[in-house]
Length: 138
Image 1 (cartoon, rainbow, N blue to C red):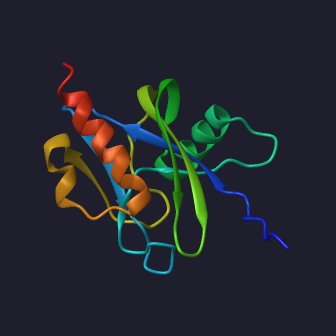
Image 2: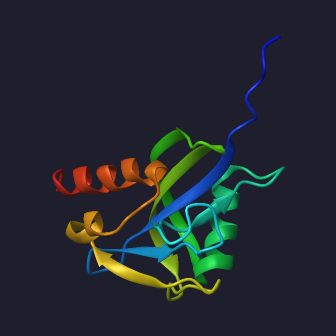
């Protein structure tokens, strides 16, 4: 008998950059999966939503911003010991409002060159790598 893997948790992720070239990150709450590590904002894609709709909703709920333009950055599938995730990652090209953290997490704006000083969940490391590579294309 073959055991079927549970479906991956589909997560929409936003890389928000401010006018100073800094990236918005937040620290996961201790009780969350991968608690204490830093992450890019976003959340689960709900039934009936496409990725863009989920990301717009999540960034409004989580960061208080209204996304007006975005572009795909990367897609990452990662298997943790206890779950599989599919991260659909988008550059947030423009938004209205002031990004903050509305869910009680610590947050900060980080210079792209300093991202590797923060501990991210393993699934997020390719996002950091993509951001770092994008710096070399300007």
